[in-house]
Image 1 (tube, rainbow over the protein chains, first blue to last red):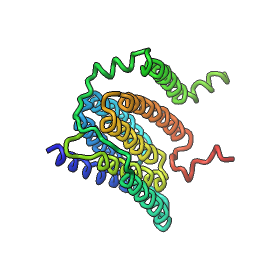
Image 2 (tube, each protein chain N blue to C red):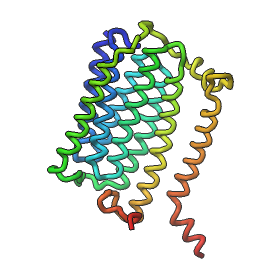
Image 3 (cartoon, rainbow over the protein chains, first blue to last red):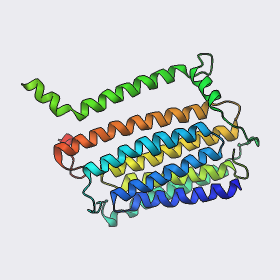
Image 4 (cartoon, rainbow over the protein chains, first blue to last red):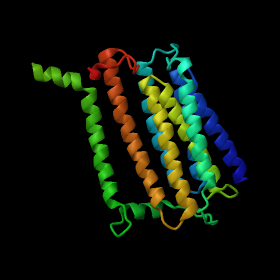
Length: 173
Length: 105
């Protein structure tokens, strides 16, 4: 059962990701990306990491996609097709990415040193929270604090960038 | 781990997803579309971290905690990049990488 769901999710992810990078309409590309992100959260739920699935749904499929949709609507002329690089040059990225992907998959399958544990483990929110706030060896309280400062800096930076013209004008006067 | 699915299959899926993102990054010229391809790559890496942690050493949570940090960083990066892109659009009415080259000279 899990296997069937995984394969359905994999087909959805790959086909919609290809559509998202090849479609000529930017707004449609955004919506395809939204469904790719939803399917990836499905993979997290399959791996019994429910917290990450919820974070993926709320932060990515909720927050980041709203940002993207606003940005597309503010900048894109709806109905005007996207300009990619010229079609005759597209053979180079196709060859490069397919070649590198084939090489990577060959390297993955020829690696022998993997001994996978065959036990299904459920990661609870409590375990993750203890790990994030633990200051003993193997705890992550310092990166956690650094991330919070980074988010604050990003918030201030985004406001400053968005209002840069106004601030410059005020300083001139 | 997912019952009946080996680590190789998940790694193949994320590899393909990553290289679809690389393809999009190389072929798009619109800045927002390039950023979307970047999101595909970041997501593939986050799935990789969780999958390898779940399959190889489920007792410790390092990969799973790191995937949370990856999500936070990616959200921050997207917010900042979209702010820059919107400001650029207000200045130049254009977000095509072929046209936006004020910083080049």
